[in-house]
Image 1 (cartoon, rainbow, N blue to C red):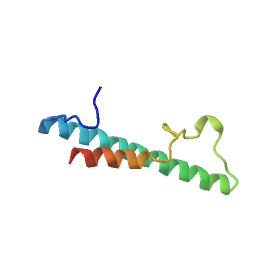
Image 2: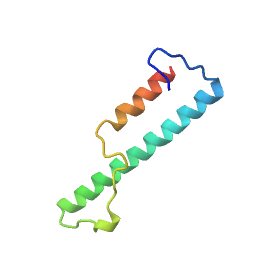
Image 3: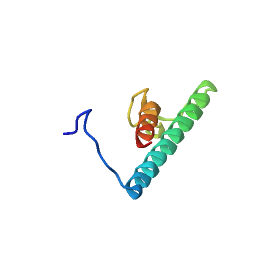
Image 4: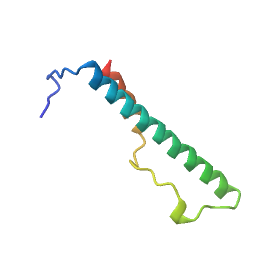
Length: 76
């Protein structure tokens, strides 16, 4: 298990892969937020989306974007 004082060395290819995965995750999270917002607007207009079509937030956490940012920041 890594500790706060340990150092992990990653090569450039690994860092690029991690960055790409984080960016894909951020894009997916943004799409979930966009769809959730659209569904809220529809509901306010009296046209709610049925339960089986509702977007379900995968993390259920309000700090998801911050966690992505922290991971990108850690890569330097």
